Structures are given as C-alpha cells and as structure tokens.
Length: 348
Ligand code: SAH
Image 1 (tube, rainbow, N blue to C red):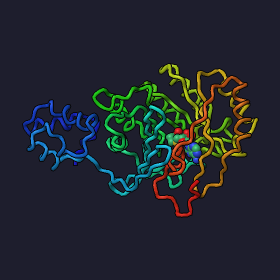
Image 2: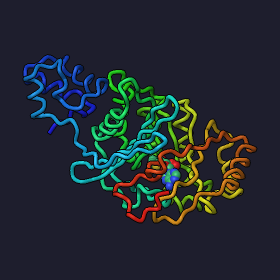
Image 3: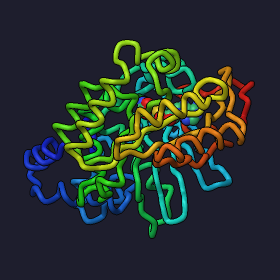
Image 4: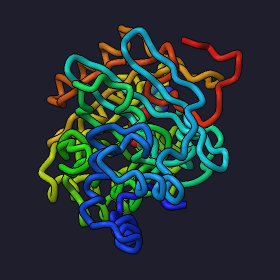
C-alpha cells in the first residue's frame, strides 16, 4: 500500500490526477497531516467524501502500532512502536521550558556496537523508511496540546543515522519544510558515531543541520574498546570529516562524550581531549552514563565529574552537561532499545 507519509509528493499527485482530482488536493492532504495533526483520513473534511473513501482504501496513514506509552514526572514521554514485520523502535518527547524536543530513531536496532548503549545490544535489523521516521515525528507531535509546536528534533534515538542517510535526509526535509513541520534547520541535530565517508556525503548534500559526533574517548586505543566500529575508522579520519562539515556548514560542531566511571573519566582523558579539541569551534557535550540493565558500567561520582569538567574548562573547551531526562522510564540517552527490557531491569 502507498504511504501518505512518503516525503515524495509525486506518487500522491499522480494518483490524484489519475483519479480525476486536482493536484492542489496534495497540499491540502499534507496540511492535514503536518499542521492539522489529523488522526485519520476521515477527519480531512475539506476533501470530498468520495476522495476520502478512495484514499482510505488505497493509502496508508499510520503503519506503526503504539505498544507502550510511558510518561515520566519530568514531562518526558516515550513511545514504543511496533512496525509492520514486527520490528520495534522507541522515540521520545522531551519538555524543557518552552522547548518541545523529540528524539527519533533511524534504524531498528544498531550495528555500531557501542558497549554502553542499549540500542545496539541485539545488532541491527533494518533501516527505517523515511515514512517511518516521519511517523515518529507526527505521533510525538500529537502528544502536544494544539497550541504547542515541536521546536527541536534530534536524530539520536536508536540506530546510526548516517548508515541510513537517504531516508533520514528525506524525512528531515519534511521536518524543516514550511509546508511540513516547519522546524528550522538549526534546531535539528544529526548525531553520529562518526562515519567519515557518509559525513562527507552529508557535507555535500545538506550541511544545514547541526552535527553531533559521538566521541566517547580521546584516543584510538580506548575508543576501539568502547566504540568497536572505531577499529576500522580511527579518530583522525572522523575529526577531519567533522572539520570539513564545519567548513561547509559554518555551524559549531558538537562532540558527545558519555562518561563511564573508571573507563574514560580520568584526568589523563580530560587532558587528551583538551589537546584534541583545543583549536576547534566545538562544544563538548558530556553525558554521565545512564544505567542500562545488564551492562557493567557505572555513572561517575560527582567529584570525578567535576574534576573532569575543571580540566576541560581550564583547557578552554566549551563544555555542557546534558540534562538527564526521562531516566525513570528508560527514555534517557542510550536507554532506547528494540525489545522490552528484561523484568529484572535496574529501573534506575
Ligand atoms: N548512532 C548515533 C545516534 C544514537 S546514540 C550516535 O552514535 O551518535 C546518541 C547518543 O546517546 C550518543 O552520543 C551517546 O552520547 C548517548 N548514549 C548512548 N548510550 C548511553 C548511555 N548508556 N548513557 C548516556 N548516554 C548514552
């Protein structure tokens, strides 16, 4: 079945023409989807009834099943979606002051294997289609009251977005389009483990988004251990590709660093990070480890975190600590997984 959430408007336009409807119906339908937050085709009451019936017979709107909807006391909400074929993904709505941010997934599972992250524990199943990526945005948008709008998107959920670049970019085109969700490019962040070839493609194709590179270690020896995909890549190539993105985009780069107690939070790591990042227009986003059931890592103590921060600040590095949101519903960074966690979950 055709999907109404396909970002390419051509198939719908062609179908409308073939069925004797004017092309402007496409824009009307898209407005219902993105702006008017329609729940189903029947609601689109400025379309002729016959058209609505024909659409409902031949076009799909929602394909995912919301298997679970959790709300945290800090305003974070998480949806567990089951896709056709049985794959499961999660996506999150975060509230922070006026901000209404969503964190969306790009793949079912993840192949990168970062040892501290729940999303890759079972490997990758498949790429999401662009319609499935858009569907997450719309389902999360519908959790907001009518007068509130989504303000930010981070592609930081399950999966490696640059391993599914075509579909991610097609979906983000709709997110940033004025006739789509109308979210400014600068409020959309693509987070990547750092795949140099795909980073260069991103620089060429669309360097308008904010880029975040998941670093997690200041040297290859350590990064090979905690971000296994690094063995075939190496920090130098990643940083060079990130620099090229910066040259094209002019947007400050973000580097992400999950702090794991006793693993990458020592003074020597902070000092190496200073030399690695010192001459760049970059922000270091430090994320104290969020516990994942079954993994052996620990969140560093406040004193270890402060010591780490002080060395970076003294080294002149812009540094920000990511606020921990949604942890009580396992919706915080790195806690999204494709299956329901075991009953013995630590539940932090
Ligand atoms: N594959 C992409 C996007 C998904 S991961 C990437 O690697 O960037 C997004 C972020 O989640 C990573 O940067 C990392 O900062 C964070 N993360 C993963 N596991 C975590 C954990 N257990 N605790 C805290 N943050 C985690």
